[in-house]
Each structure stands twice: as C-alpha cells, then as structure tokens.
Length: 87
Image (cartoon, rainbow, N blue to C red; front, side):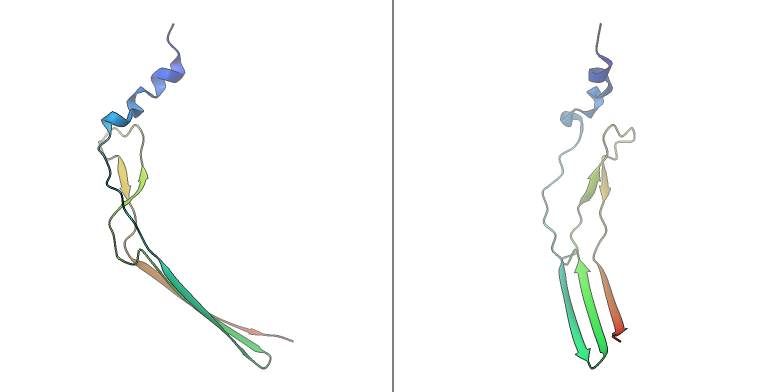
C-alpha cells in the first residue's frame, strides 16, 4: 500500500521546475525628527528595489500551467509626514 503523503508531493520534485537565477535587491530609507516647541514634526522616505531588479517573489509548487514563479514588484517608494502637538 502506497502512502498518500508521498504521492501527494511527487509533482513538487525540484527537477520539474526551471532554475531561478540568484538575485540581490537593495532598499534605502531615511527619516528626520524636528522638535519645535510643543510641536514634533517627523518625516521619512523609503525606496524598495533600488536598482529595479526583476526577480521572483515566490515559488508556486504543483503549478499546472508551468508558471512556477510569481514576479516581485519593481522599484517603488513611499514618503510620509507626521505632525504632533505635545500638551
């Protein structure tokens, strides 16, 4: 009698999936806080995937359409400001 646990994962063998090249991504972030009397002002900026590298975000096991890798986001950024009044 075959174990159903072993046959359930037979399609997940690494030899069926194409190799994904290695990759490196970089991010950068900065922030600043300014205290002006009772006011506290803060700001930040961030860039993800600084060099806009194309890479796989995740691997799909047992994919039936031969699309084993999902792409990651390209370069993206965010920035923000915050103002607080301290009583």
